[in-house]
Each structure stands twice: as C-alpha cells, then as structure tokens.
Length: 424
Image (cartoon, rainbow, N blue to C red; front, side):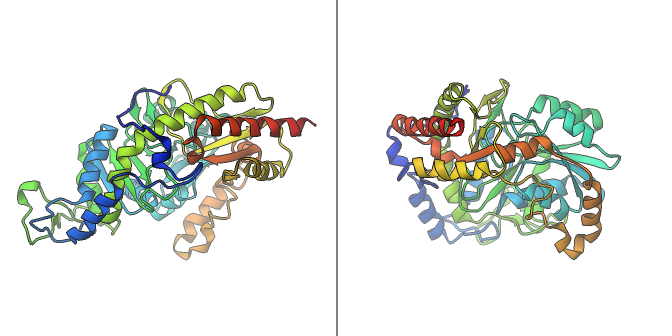
C-alpha cells in the first residue's frame, strides 16, 4: 500500500495549499473551467443547447469520473444525500422495507432511508476499523430487510468480500456509501463500484470537493436512464445524435417519477478541475498516513486504523486517532491539546446513529409511523464497538496529511507527548 494510482503529480506541495491543514484547495484549472462554464450561460442540466456550448461540464465530469472509477454509469447530483435517496429509490423496494446501515456514519445515511420510504436498521461495527462487519449485518437482518447500505468510514473500506457474500446469500442489493472513499480500491476495484449502486458526496470537506455536490455510480449500464430520471424530474439525456441547438438536451422519458437533484454546471466545472489533482493528493496523504501507522506502533496507548490487506489503495477522509482506555470526557481534552500543539483542527467523532441528536426522526409528522417503528426496533439494542470508538478517539481531517516531513514530525511528536502526559 498504497496501490496503483490513476495519474497526477505534485512537484511542490506548497503549490496546491496555503498552509498545513488548509482546505479546500483551489486546483490549477479551476478558474479557467469555472469561467468557461459561467460564460457558456449553460448553468444547469435543463439549459438550452448552444452552438458554442454543446456539452456541459456536468456531462464531462460524469464521463471522466466514470473513467476514473472504471464504471459505465455516473450520474452527478446536487448533494451526496440526494445520491443516497436516488439510489435507494431506484431499487424499487416496497414501502416500509428495512435497510441495514452501520452505526458509525453521517446522519444522511439513515435519513435517506426514511426519505426513500423505508426504515433503517442500525448494526454495530468492527472495533478496529469502524465499518460494518458480516457478523453484525447477519445479526441485524429482519424478515423485512430488503437492502444494505455499506459505509466506507473515515479511512478504511468495509470488508466487501464478506459483506457481499452475506448480501448475496440473503438476496439483498448493496448500496455503497462511498462519500468518504473517493479513489479507494478493494482488490484494485474502486469503492462505489463493488455493490449494485455507489454514492459519493462532493461536499466542502471531502477529498473531491465542489462545496456541495454528489454522484450515483454503478458498474451496470442498465441503471443509467432510471438514475437520470430520478435526478431530473423524470427526464434523461437524449442520445448525442438527437441533441439540437436551441433545445434542451433532456428528453421527457418519464419511466419513474423523479426530483430535481441536478448538479449545477459551475460546480461540475470545479469537479473536473478537482479530479485532475485527486490522485496526486492521495499519494501525499497516503504516504504520510502509512508513516503514522508505523510511528504509532512505537507510541504506547495510541493507534490508528490499519486498512485490511484487500484494500489496495487508501482514501483518507477523517483519521480517528485512538487513545487506549480513555476515561469519560478525556478525548475532548486530548483533542484540545492536539490542536494547541499542532495548530491542526482536531475534534471528536460523531455520536453513533442511535441516540444522535441529528437523527430526530420524531420531528417529521409525515414519517411518524416509520419513526415509531425505528424507535421500537432499536429500543434495547447496543452498539459497544461504535460507542467505544467514539468515546476514545480524536479525529484529524485528511488535509492534515497534505504535510511536509517536518510537519509530520510535529504531529508524531505531539502524539508522543500526549501519550507521555497520560502516563504521568
């Protein structure tokens, strides 16, 4: 590790960042692409085709991201949350179906299940990586389980071999929430391209950022029209030979009722520029992370997740630094001390889904029946691994690993000092 890259080099780290930990980074071609999109006057997928702008950056990004992931289908969206709703709706499950989700993830993984008309069932995670396990998935299955959302969390991928085997055994489609795993590889296959559908976020903090954006992807070309209709009010792209100047490039194919989830073209232009830089940034981050893994082996009581050997390429989003036997409330103090000594943003992991204030399902009357069922399903369930990770970890953002050797020295020294303080 890291495994094969998709190209891109950085001769000077400081040419792509302002300061250690600064994010997002403006890529070299961003100004040119965004200005080009601005002056094309084609700012949306529903814009009129002009002689000077026959193709949108949205279409270009879909094509280039598909090549990057080695899949035939990419449909850009306005948000990663929308991508999840689209993917779940595309499955066509009966109303009220159960969908298994892991306890450690952003709240949108669960709220998207409700928004699609289903009920999330939360399972515990691996105590080392924070990702769903095959055993936890099997234990969470109910007679009404109809799908699984696998989340690649923080900086490691879930065990896709084992999870896909359980899902196949139970006859369940798999949606990959790859919002934190752009460019990660499992046995040299891209995160998001291993299940039936994959979902990405291009939100401000992500490694591929446009401020707000997302994408649904699939290794199956057959999903494309259905997904396009779901994001464009039941419209899909016309074949290239049928696109005429003066008309919209969308046809009212209306195979399924959709919503307006389209990515605007200024964001798509930025996405194209960001994608050009992504692998070069991965190379720097991943090298620094692997160094930290080795250094933590020499720091008593401090550890970071070690990706499984099947993960042939890393994609860092957040790095949970775990302090063994942390007392209640100690992680908050350690996060503050790490911020003081390094200047880096350091913070606590999110609360596991069940009990999170963000998952306030009872506040929406339209899903009252599903909210009541969710509460009943989870009344006596425990999530010891997820809770232990959340209680004992301090998180660093991936931008901390776009670092020089000297900056990594500072981080390692700070962690060693914190470990020493804890022993005194």
